[in-house]
Image (cartoon, rainbow, N blue to C red; front, side):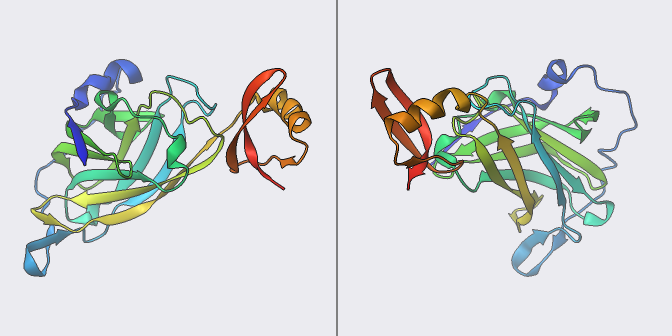
Length: 229
């Protein structure tokens, strides 16, 4: 089941600061997707995933932005209609996104160029994957950056993997997996929790990425991460 939200692609300039003036790399509007048998469309040379990072890597922190960067090569021979970002692990610990704050622009976060219009942003609650649709589609020859804004960072530290899929313009587009991004979140408060957790449950072997265990003791309760040895 999908929930759909509208987001304006020009609304993020205040978050990024003033964009540098530059030549219009979004046009000219001449690229057409390669048409395959059955009316399907595809990239001639598909987009490649370049990088992913977060502006804040501490668990449970607010005001982070997750950036995903793709290269849409000049000889892609098809405009980029949309991008799907789907978590591949630890999905239960991810927090919902503020979809109306989604941003997209050409260039990189360190060197933004032009805002990209966003026609629609939707979430598939079963995955939960995020689909960002561009309006108009992005022409080949651009580096494309998408920024997602979660309500909070996840509550479990570790490496979170996201599959990034590019979809060309057309009525029956053939999706292409551009690559996988990794976001690494850390927990700087662990040293205050672990000694008490070990004293409360001596058989607990703590390690990143383990199961969530809820311990109760004389000092109250605590959530710690690990597995029984």
